[in-house]
Length: 81
Image (tube, rainbow, N blue to C red; front, side):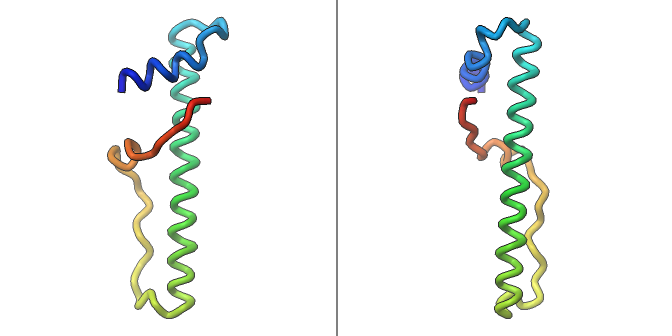
């Protein structure tokens, strides 16, 4: 986790920002990426569920929950900016 933060901070180093501003930029980008990824995964789950339902294979089942946990967030791989 520390090595990841150092790597991400190095991406914004040299922009003339104070350390707290650099951390804020990294957190903002990270939040955007995580939120966007969760939204895309949720949409894919709903689309897949709709296809199953249309094919009669859902069997009255409900779509999977879309809430995330910290372990979900940890499994999302982000690439440097």
